[in-house]
Amino acid sequence: MSIFIGSGAAVCTPFDAGNRFNPEEYEKLIKFQIENGTDAIVSCGTTGELSTLSKDEHIEVVRTAVNAAKKYGETQGRNVPVIAGAGGNNTAYCEEIGRELAKAGADALMYTTPYYNKTSQRGLIEHFTRIAAAVNVPIVMYNIPPRTAMNMTPKTMAELAKIPNITAVKEASGDFGHVAEIAERCGDALDIYSGNDDYIVPILSLGGKGVISTIANIAPAQVHDLVMKFHEGDVAGSRKIQLGILPIVRCLFADVNPIVIKTALNLMGFKMGGLRAPLVAPEDVLIAQLQQAMKEYGLI
Image 1 (cartoon, rainbow, N blue to C red):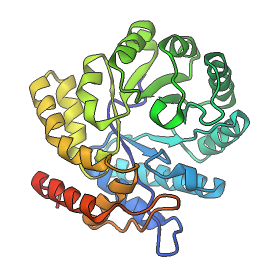
Image 2 (cartoon, rainbow, N blue to C red):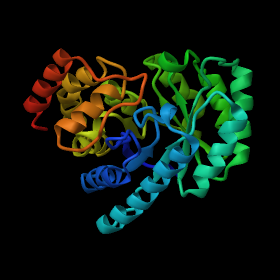
Image 3 (tube, rainbow, N blue to C red):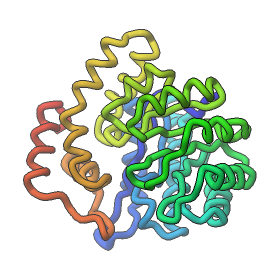
Image 4 (tube, rainbow, N blue to C red):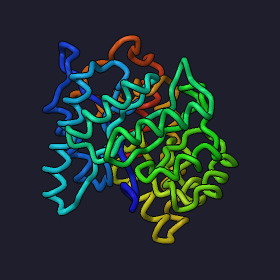
């Protein structure tokens, strides 16, 4: 059974004036997501600035997400799973934090491939096998070579998909031949989610279940509809939404994520606060381009 089908919003982490986690605003963000049809909450991913959070903050953010998703999901008569980012380049710590996040109520865990020290394909199999044995919740592997400088091959994914609780991959390689081979080798044993907002429809066409999305922070209903229209057979309607969001997507990724998406949420009236160093605010020219794109799309 899939963790979710549709749009998983990779929710930004808001900070207060002292650059501390702001749980009240985070709950508002999750309420906004669920009321607008988002199918899963992804907490503490790249977009959630995981790499700048302490262990205690990490657990607090995920616990807040779990409680808010349950609260607002119940008001909508829906079960909205929380997927907690838990990636790192230290296998032992990945095991440890995975157990803690599962205790905090996460329905699934998402792990990037190790970065900087990286590893071999054999090492990836060892890394994910150990993590899977350490936790009792589903695992989403996250393949994002542009950030980690480590690409997981379809052959490796097929081997790992034999492990019962490794159930999905967030695929952000940008290589559609690679995605097609994942689908070919893994079949129903591994769900595929798009890891990029600019090619959701192409991944759906290769059997993808949905997207783990950045733009869903500001356009949750549209991203949900994009995926559902495709699955319901309205490919033209899905494609129309995909093409319509591209001007905003180009702005969002004109600087390092989540710099621009946090700015976009602030423009919409959410109190996101600033970024944690080494990330810095976008340049004024990019903010102006973002504002224009959001106005034209009707978001502000």
